[in-house]
Amino acid sequence: MSKYASTPRYSLIAPAVLATLLASGCAVGPAYQLPSTPQPAAYKETASEAQKAAAGWTAAAPADTLERGPWWQLFGDPLLNQMADSIEVSNQNVAAAVAAYAQARALVTEQRASLFPVVDLNGSANRSGGGGTQTGNQYRANIGASWEPDVWGKLRAGANGAPASLQASAADLAAARLSAQGELATNYFSLRQTDAEKALLDATTEGYERVLQITQNRFDAGIAAKSDLLQAQTQLASARIDQITLVRQRATLEHAIAVLLGKAAGDYTLAPAPWNVVVPDVPTGVPSTLLQRRPDIAGAERRVAAANEQIGIARSAYFPSLNLTGSFGYGAASTGGLFNASNNLWSLGLTAAQTLFDAGATKARVSGAEAGRDQAIAQYRQTVLAAFADVENQLAATRTLAQQLDLRKAASEAADQVEVQMLNRYRAGQVSYSDVVTAQTTALTARRALVQAQADRQNTAIALIQALGGGWHAASE
Image 1 (cartoon, helix red, strand yellow):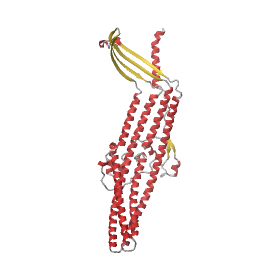
Image 2: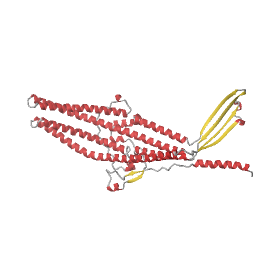
Image 3: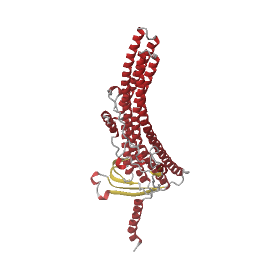
Image 4: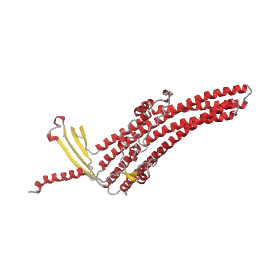
């Protein structure tokens, strides 16, 4: 057989080998491994000594995509439930995070499209002449395609990194939503606390007014000194000042709630209502693995994955880039014969480019990508450590505030009794009015401290729920 007869066989084998190489690809980036993280067997504030000794580092397994549920319903406030539901569509920070997620999703589609050929359709019509040449027409129509084979895994690394960035954006969205919900709940209960303190001061002011009248009568009768009257007036004025301060604080909280709900502060009013002092029983024995459901931890882990893919993209510069092009079309001097078989035109091409010298630029880019991955890992671990500290802080606060609340109640009850006794003794002329003022001040301080303790417990419960990732499921413990 002649060499010419064997040519078709070789012309089929070569493309087949090339196609196999292109299909298999050569990944030049490192395989991604989940970073190890500190993983205690139980929280310090609730763990036994054996559990503390078993603490160590384990691979992360973020579960931030699990449904958290409407955790705010645990507080049993219908108005809060209504407002929290509207956060999803009205809060502008959440809306910005939703837009960022949509942008990341579009980037994923764009990156995946780079793995496929680009096909285009072209058409042209030219008329030329002059200079003694014959005037003529030229018509062309052709369809062309170009494709960059992903031999070294550069495009695949970009396509893999984009979903990781998308997942990080999704985690950012969950974090923004959780933050807005937590801030709304905190501001709402702080406003209800202000309403309760305002009601307390209103009742206290009425009592001070009665005491002032008693002191005025005693002064008019020559029984009490002018200093007693002045002290009573000062006590009443101070209470009224505190009332005005609470009005300002309430307005600030109401405006903050309006902003969270995406409404103008001037158009939003939240009427006073009774304070539903409910503190949900957050399970302090929740496994530490639940911490992996925190959106900030999940987002940090996904950014490690995205940074890892950047190493493969940088390393691909060490290898030649290939580009396949092809076109098929027709050309003729008239439109009538444009698509005749004798007028068809075609072309096939393969180009390759390789950088021979760049003064270490490629190596520097690879080193930079590796350093970026190491930075992402360190930031991820720091996020985990800070998250564990956050949970421990809230668990400690939950325990101590529960103990303080009982003491606050006892102190307030005792101070109320002392106030009543001192006022009765003053009426009987047994003590000076300064003793009454001291008892009144102590009683009011104790009452307000009790209200603050109740609010602190609610706010700590909110903070603990946020620290745990926004909720829990008993079945998964």
